[in-house]
Image (cartoon, helix red, strand yellow):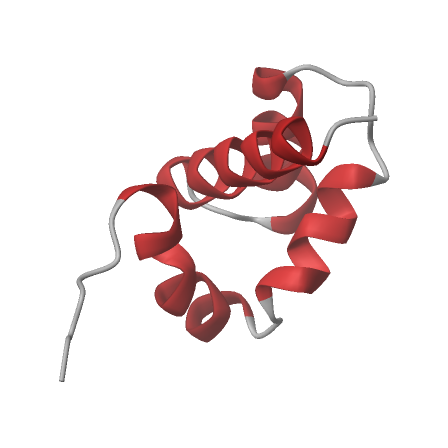
Length: 73
């Protein structure tokens, strides 16, 4: 049995879901609705409009942007 530890931005996801009461898919949709805003604008939006802390907002934005870059246009 392998218990691989989650690393990087996704390591924040359980605490984001617990603290803000929504699944990560919800927050990713919130971020994607603001495209083509830049990284820091998206972080600021999550902080200002949704009361998210900087670390949580930054992790969510970084992961979502990276995921979308991997998927391509």
